[in-house]
Length: 284
Ligand SMILES: [Fe+2]
View (cartoon, rainbow, N blue to C red):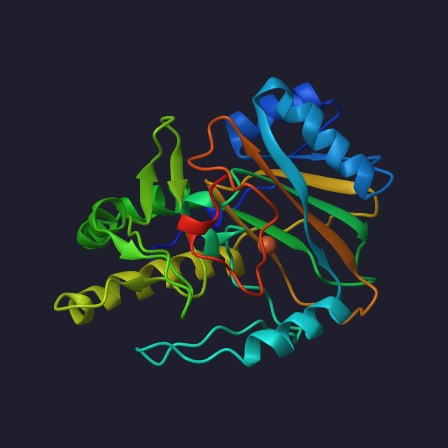
């Protein structure tokens, strides 16, 4: 495996913007923008609604990220069995560790939100900085090294399983794909796996290389702090997000999911991350 230098370049530190219209333009062009002066969760949802305008299809609170909530959900997920390959879902509760870079809603396949709003109600006293990684840029950096040609081709063309253990999505797709609306969608989360079968062993090194590259971008790239009242507006198809470690039990962040008319699929109701339904059951 050849890890390229320069992966830090794939990290995005969003520009500050002042209106929903500007946020929309900057998210479309650069993948993310930060807005400040958001009073509460209701205000955060109202901003997202204004940003998406006539293209809005669905928006709502998805996750209240607090230590207490995380521990409750983690206990439920810990009861879920391993899958046929021995892989198991796990919600990590040790906040001192950096989060794996991920797209939100990865358990829901085509029904994942295309827009994401991360509203910081109360940041950690110290640490807990946010990171954002442009997945298309990670592949572009890797491609500069001819030794990575086969791996990059794999990410662009070979279908893999994006399901979480025991919650099969029933469909496969490549790590990077172009959506029917013509937008790039690139994915990363802790459970990416080759499709089970004869090619599985030969494909694992490519999947592991992808995770190593995304993780190197996280660990070497710039990070930023979301202060109280600030919100990151994110293209959840193109960027992976997360936060670095902290130990503040009072940190509170709201993750709000939005679907625009360009989303691949829009769910009929709120999604349950503890017990994700198969995508076929989500349609309206
Ligand atoms: Fe997230």
